[in-house]
Amino acid sequence: MNDFEKALEILQANGVIMHPTETCYGLACDVFSESALAKIYEIKGREKGKPLAILVFDIEMAKEYGVFGDRALGLASRFWPGALSIVVPRREKLPKFLNVGEKFVSMRVSSDKFSTDLVKALGRPIVTTSANLAGESVMYEVDMAKFDAPVLGGGNLKDLIDFVVDGGKIPLNKPSTVVKIEGDRVTVLRQGEIFI
Image (tube, rainbow, N blue to C red; front, side):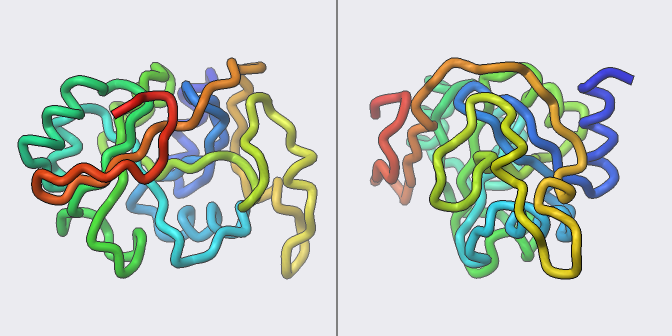
């Protein structure tokens, strides 16, 4: 079994993977797995109320989970796949346990083939976040020592990551640009690789 098949198997079994993307190493799980989502928050030490983004395969999949008006469609058509996260009103199809209380969801189509192929093979979005402890710098190569901390009930944070895809050192890139779209208004929430 190769890394791709193993990563897909882990996602299908409600697990959490660490994998390289075009911006940095990320943690990912199936968007419909509440237990895996809880593990990601625990691994990162992230506040439960802080929302997470999703990766989709293409614009058609994005429209199933978010409301895309002309402005959002124009940006997605121009910059996807790529390092642009678009925050749009969420649709009912997304599970209620994802980003509780949030009316919007951040999504993008990755330009990283491994990530995009995973989403395609899974047939639904994956939750994505940088593989780092909250407040610490992102990882450009696998460094499991960063997750060498005990968890309540025994074990270690790194034990919560079910599979690591080691793609070696990846180039130091800026994070994705994040834009929120409400009607025709575009607000840049984070300036990254792409300038809007």
